[in-house]
Length: 72
Image 1: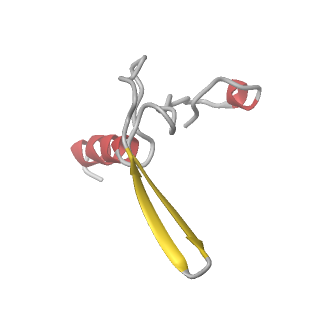
Image 2 (image 1 turned 90 degrees about the horizontal axis):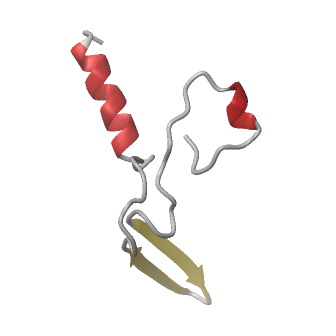
């Protein structure tokens, strides 16, 4: 799973494109400093440019669904 093609991806058998974390998908940011905790929700600022999937939720779900169809 990668956001861009690199030298390491040349050796992969399967390459799954993922959405860029800052612009194309939802995220949760947390920070703790000086005894104060803060949690922020980050929303997508642009629509997905290509046919990509969210690597934390969509890709594992799609893999599990395909494996369930085959009896695993």
